[in-house]
Length: 462
Image (tube, rainbow, N blue to C red; front, side, top):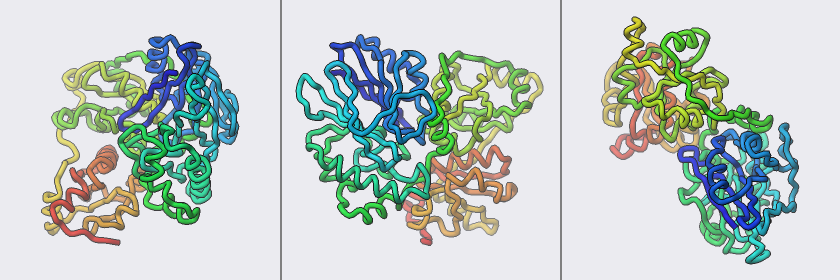
């Protein structure tokens, strides 16, 4: 048997290639949209990818299932409760998928979504008992899948189903079964997912809070409180995955001239500057949106840019193009037109404007100094309600990041605004949105509320 895990930092998504080297066949489980890595590994191991299996329809990232099927002619498999609209084979509880000496046993484990499944991995050359469990978004390291991404109206019902899945399926497994989850740290599909990328059922049985609660009603309360913000653009991502993602094909480098860029911007395209913050501060194109091309780009962009908008990239290096395109495509931003191939010096030589400066980064003590002035800025806390209630900067107004794009117009663009979150990550996304909207003075608190607390500054509790 051969098994390899693939992990995407930032989004925290894990996918798997599992197969039988003797028979030369393999399946990919929960594929990412950049499918070349699976093809490369399969070729190196002498495997043909014949199956593409989804543990559920994802809400945090767009699947690579149709992409992989188009390149390999592999069949896609999804549980019947998904009601998927694309061409696929239907799975049901108890089904078995045979890959040479490897058997994948399907168990329906609803809770994160109604169609969530777990795949029990059996190496028939060793035993008929499950060796591993590919758990999707049901059981994580130290956590279980959140029940609210299908919709808040059914969250309690799904939480109850998750409790049954954990009690009646997972806690019936042997302690030695390896748990290989669909997410690790960084994912918004759980509350407190561990950073280690695998575990055992025995360890989780004793140390995972989600497996400690025997009472169903108590578990429902546990699972539906204290949740982080929902992934940006999650409803649209879910719909894309239900309909079947568009096949991207090979990503070709496409450089655009200054005149091309100006023309596309006039047609409604957005210029996304993904260079470092230092470079952006020195010089940038007015009206561009700045979001660094780091591991958090996929998580942040859905809170800042509208869906289906044509995008032009401003890159530090053309070599970054493919990586950035996939970072955007993973969360449903497919309409990248190209990148500005000409330099900013060429832009200026054509008498087009540039600007310098940026949203100002401040620390907790600098925020305190601003609040001591007669003309205080408006402080916006973009954390979740439960975080805000535990303690916030005195006088801060709550607008969670998931609501920020919709509610930003409530704010006065002429009034100085300070944006704060827990650590400075979410607030940077909100600050970028205010910058795009033309707010004159925007501050981002580096270190966030945690930094405020570490300085011994007072908290207000609601």
